[in-house]
Length: 129
Image 1 (cartoon, rainbow, N blue to C red):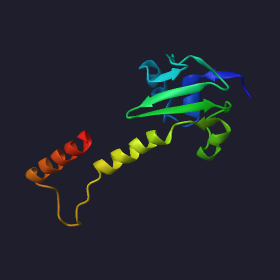
Image 2: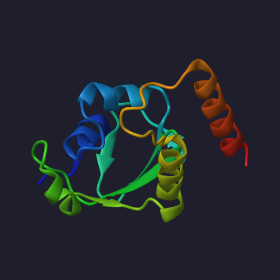
Image 3: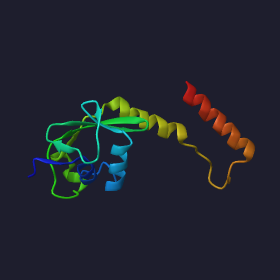
Image 4: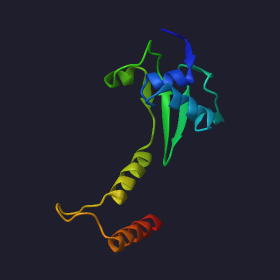
C-alpha cells in the first residue's frame, strides 16, 4: 500500500466525514490536530500518527493503521484506523441525546407555546447541573 496520503482524503476514505469537502473544511477551520498542531488539508499523513478531531461536543482521537486505495466499507475500518476516543467522550453524546429527548403521547399534538417554554426552561435547568 501507500506510505502516505493527504489527511483530508484519508478522513473521507475511512468514513470520518461524509464528503471530502467536509474533511477539508474541518482541516481549514482548525478542528484537526496532529501532535497538538493544526494541519492543512494537504498535509501528508503517515502510519502510526494520532489524529485529534474536535466535533462539538466530543474530541475524537484516531490512530492511522494503514491507507486504503479508495473509500471503504464500514466493516473494514479496523484494518485502516483505530478509534482511541475515551468512553467519557462517548458518554457526553449519550447524555446530550437523553437531555434532548422528549416523549409525547400519540395524538396529543404539538405543544402549546406555554408548554414549549416550560420544556425549554427544564432543558436549560438540566444543562446547568
